[in-house]
Structures are given as structure tokens and as C-alpha cells.
Image 1 (cartoon, rainbow, N blue to C red):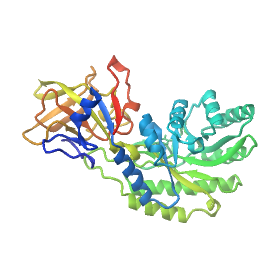
Image 2 (tube, rainbow, N blue to C red):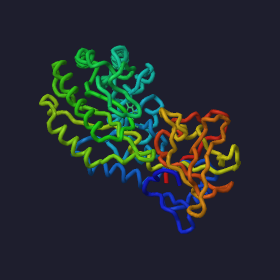
Image 3 (cartoon, rainbow, N blue to C red):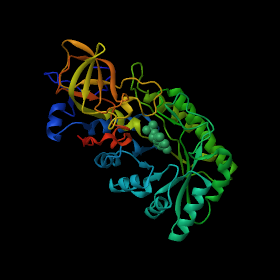
Image 4 (tube, protein in one colour):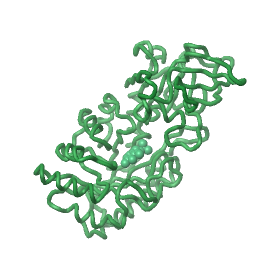
Length: 407
Ligand SMILES: Cc1ncc(COP(=O)(O)O)c(C=O)c1O
């Protein structure tokens, strides 16, 4: 075992790892092959429920499906959250196919093509507009279709979510419009070809500091009030505050204190500017909702020694799980939580677990402490529910895709 294994993955009496009530080996036998992603339905449900229990009444919960767009998982999530955030025409199709009503889908992301705008407007999905040019194109398409385009303005926040894995505020950015340009575009959104839906702010991702998240939410609410006043508009129907909730991947990381976040957000919303009195608020989370429910299973196909080190070579790797190899937005490579799923306890060894790609980047764990592992054993990489297969270069080197299952 290496790192902090999330709750919900016990061992059987024989030492085998269990996922959703069955051993990893059973799931692999049923799927017929490795590598295999398993996503635990009950853990996903519990996660969404814990959000509801901790957060202020009425705060909307949207799922950013970029974190995991597996169709079965989306169908499950559609019953747990208030809306989906999508980032492409492909995600639009998946969101609708999962049964999420178009009225509860919003589309954010730079570079929306005309055909994507058209599909979204025709379906009745809200656009989180990223620029003046995009608003013009959406307006022209809406007029041509004889339909109103539902539009919200994505504002590039003039502040960062401090300590975020990925900063998306406080800098020059392709995402959203600068605050200075917002009032004019908010006024333009009152034209007859649009239905104004509100404001969208997204300041950062993967943050484990309650204080930093609350500070950015406080600033976001303040900014939403200021921009609404400057544009001389009534309350925006919805203020989407983004999110940035992180999960503990690495030794020393701690789970976010959800109760503290909920209390803080309740206070921020209670003290919101009067002009936002009638607005609804929502958070838009990807990783936090799904990361911990996922496990990536691969099989050891070789074990070898080199330069005094033991290497366990698996049939998995960065083509399925780029993030776990430290190549998806991390500055310093650290091990994701990982374990031998076939055995537990006994004599331990220090081993480096690698994938099957011929690049030195393909390392699932560097010098991990594991029970002495054999060829044929299953390796489990945890925290694999978000940005796994969907954020990996699957075609690289022509290995088969990973199997994915909601269990
Ligand atoms: C607009 C937007 N919303 C939501 C997310 C999801 O972020 P996370 O998975 O960190 O919750 C992202 C991630 O980049 C994003 O760009």
C-alpha cells in the first residue's frame, strides 16, 4: 500500500481488495480483461448526499462532466445533481443522452464552434459565453433559428483561487471576459434574441484550503453584485460560483472540511449584496464528486531489477491514467494512492510500478512500499474516478482502451 487509500475499499479475509462488495479479481474476471476502471455507484451517491447535507439550502450542485463522461456514470449522476456543465458538442450529446434536461445544462469553454453553438441553442442549453465574439455568433445563430439563446456571462475573475492546482483567475486568460468588459456584455445580453441566465465565475481547481475556497467565493459574490450594479440590471437569475473543491491525492493532503465550507458559504450568501437578493447560486464540481469513487486496476506482467531497484511492469499506464503518472498539470511528480489488490500484509518490498509504454514518463508509483508482488497480481490505483481515461492519450502506442464499469 502506498499513500492514503480512500474509505470504502476494504480487504477480504484472503487479503484481496474489495470494491462495491466484490473482490478486484472477481470484477476483472467478469470484465474479461485488464486494465479496468471501476466506479462505485454507492460512493458517488454518498458523496452527493454529503454535499447536500453540509451546504446551505437551495445552493445548486452542478456536475462538470469533463471529470468523467462515462454514459452509465452520467445517468447515475443525473439523478443526484441539479445540472450538468458541459464543454463541447460531444459532451452535449452525452449529457442529453444521460437524461439531463437541456434546461439544466450549461455549456462553458473557449472555442465553441458555430455548429456547437447551434446544437446547444436548438436544444435549449444555456451558454456560458466566453467573449464578445462568441456572443455575436450566438446572437446571429439564435436569430437564424428563430429561437432565443439562453446566455450567461463567464467572467474571468480578477482574483485567483489561492493554492489551486490549476489557477483560472487573476491572470490574462482565454476563459471568460475580463471584469472591465462585463457590464457592456451583460447589457448586450438583454437583446430580444437572448434570454439572460446570469453569471459564471470559475477561479481554480483542486484546492484543499477551506479558507482559500471561501475567500474566492466571497470575492465572486461581491464581484457578481458589482457587475450587476454597473450594468444597471436586476438580479441575475443564477450566479454560478464555480467550485475548485479538491481531493487528497498525496501524503499529507487532508479531505476538505465540508461542514466548514457549508457554514462559510451560508454566511457569504446571507451577507450577499442586496442587488443579488433574488438570485439563485450554484457550485460546479467535477473532481470532488467522482474522484474517490474510482479505482483503476491493472495487472503485473513483468518484474525486474535494474540498478538495485525493483520494477513492477503492468499492462496499464499513462495512456489510461495520465494524471496518476504526474503528467496532467502537476509540477512535482508524487504517487497517487496505490496498492497490490491481490494480496495484503506479509513481507514488504520497495518497488517502482510502471506502465507498458516505452517512455520514462510512464510511472504509476515511484518507490512504493508494497507486499512482495508477483507477476499476475493486480495493482489498484485509487482516486481514479476523475480525469482518468477521459484525460489520457488513449491512442498512444496502440494499446487497447481500458474497460470502464459503474458498479
Ligand atoms: C468551467 C469549469 N467548470 C468546472 C470544472 C471542474 O473542475 P474540478 O474538476 O476541479 O471540480 C472545470 C475544470 O477545469 C472548468 O474549467
